[in-house]
Image: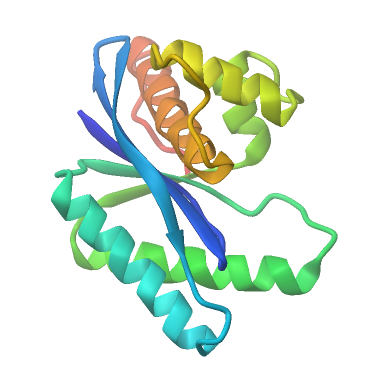
Length: 168
């Protein structure tokens, strides 16, 4: 199965593609979508959503795993990220691709086994689980790869217990 992971953001949206074969993960590609702050907000959001849709098609993603907003002190930043998330979901649903949202603690739990892991612990586990020589850079891309792993872990767990996979 090909999973596209998304770490949404207005300035930088991380993306990663992982092939999941049984309990093994193979990194396919990763990167960051950057937007220019001189462009209008609707144009930036639209460009991000469009590029994510193109990535999903390019890599034949079967599912998208994306970090959801959990809590933030900066409300205006959270609102912008929420708009990006909504636009991405709309774009992918138009392409008939399932999207699953995970909170930061769910991602940390799935990747490291601890819901309160720090960023470096998550990135080190991404490196280990994907058999990479170094932590993927930039950070947003590493976070997107963690999203891929999270989907795989949740999916495999629900499969083992015989229940349908029904996360947000």
